Length: 478
Image 1 (cartoon, one colour):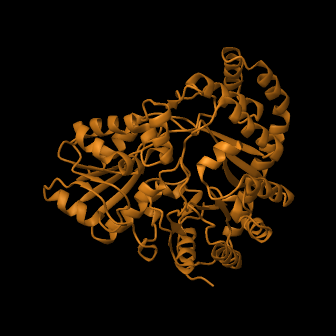
Image 2 (image 1 turned 180 degrees about the vertical axis):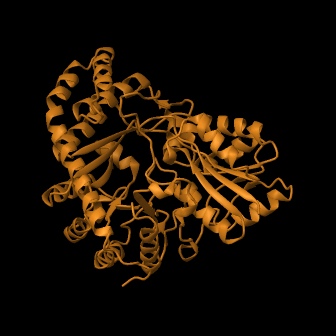
């Protein structure tokens, strides 16, 4: 039986540990197993292993094919793994996929010809054929499979993820794709703008099967590109999830503000959602308009206030350095954040990836630097990579200064002793002493927020452990 190792490398940061084995690779392993291959998923972010130990684990599996999922943010680390692994097992064929391949396949194939296949897009329907041909000695070059229709998206069997017995979060897709065209987003190149729904029955069955197999799971995470595009359909899913009386809560990556209403929040509250996250992007009207989200800042303000009215934890996401932005424009985002008073904020640094209209804007109006191995999300300890782009009106130095001011004044980092020392040094380096003292004043309130969130999580886990003793198998839906 031919062995396939499906691999994902971590970002080399302590704050990027995954809650589950790589979802996309688990789907591929599930398909391969059903077709007679022996396939396993090795996710370094989930296993949380150092590089050498992880390399030895994958090499010890002695695969005939190694499929690696590549990410632009840590592309260099992945290439280093491939080179070291190939030196240990020169007979193993290597194929590549993932978000980086979806955007940069041509460059990857030209500069790194040791890949037997480079797969742009969703591979569930073609992975068996690819592996069969690669094992026969064929070099397939760049492949562009058609997006998988919703009814053909397979059920993920996480048994094939190494270490999955310790999994506490279960991801699931109710749909794929996003019809919107946000200027900073490359979704059209990665999962397409065509929305593809899975049936609610199949999704609930998948959840039940997985909960029966993994008793440690306490959270089901919805990882759709746009989960509430069809709001009534999503509400129907939540009602049926609640009716199942499962022992877990629902979590969602983020919601569009214009789909939030009282009934949706009430249902999410019954699902014990730990927080509701809204992607704001920018609080400046001109920058926000260029993003073309298909909603308004008024929608975001209304949604934020409604979430707080329902006493649900509110998380907000912003992006520093979007097209047309300036330091002053980022201060509008900071002011909006302070007005909405979220519990947690994420301040991301814009990356001008291929496939996004925003990259085209920067090609005309600014300068684009190295994109690989640059992070959009700075580390919780206030370490970060240099911004990957700038304009004459908003330089790299000023982008860092805007990011730091927003992070400090909203206390959006883990304030460990080393991070506090670093915040002091950065405040001096970037002339942000006022922000530093605002941060010090905000720490007690943020401690209360963290205590409430952590306490709620601990309580949920305790209830889950007790109720799991009385669980019956959940092989069917209601």
